[in-house]
Length: 291
Image (cartoon, rainbow, N blue to C red; front, side, top):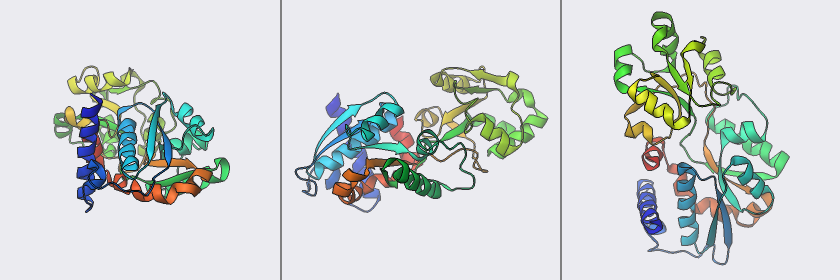
């Protein structure tokens, strides 16, 4: 099974590199390099699909550059971060929104765009924690509001700015399924209500396991809308529509490799160059890979 997974990821990586104008050798091993010969890396993964994909693609690229790579599967953000800071990991992929809220203690990003947020996270995390953030990929795995595509046509919905209108005209249609954290997190439902200027009726909220949010939205029972992560593969598989966050209620979650400063000083430039193809992974591509 692992050989099948590795082959699939190598094929996907080849497609990404080709789309960026590069050759395919870096992914399939036909053109191995020596930039990192003699180096050994411990990579951390949080264990969910997208993080596994990013980590495995990173492994393929590093090994193709001559490095030896081991992967540690750690179940939580806190544990993988502690392993990095404790010297048990050389690097792992982290999300800018997670860095901003979990590690730096901020609740809001104000008017910072995704690139500016990455720059601020990188600056503050280096100053306070000696952690380096490499350049980010272009996709963002943030919160979103999903709905059946047929219902968007019926109700005339395109963006989240259409929700206050629906709240006025047909509030009973605003049934929303959320996981346990979305309703209370400052960057969750409160951010939607503050940014778009309406209160989501509490009687229309259903709290459930995250996986059940997709089932509920797909069937319309009990919810027409669901709070999801925007790169979840089930969006495409179930042909759901994610309403455009046209007023930027949700924080940006761009993924980037993080390393401790001393390790970065040793190999950071080489690693940045070698993983550059992964920075071109876009929203559509990663969502399909996640499916």
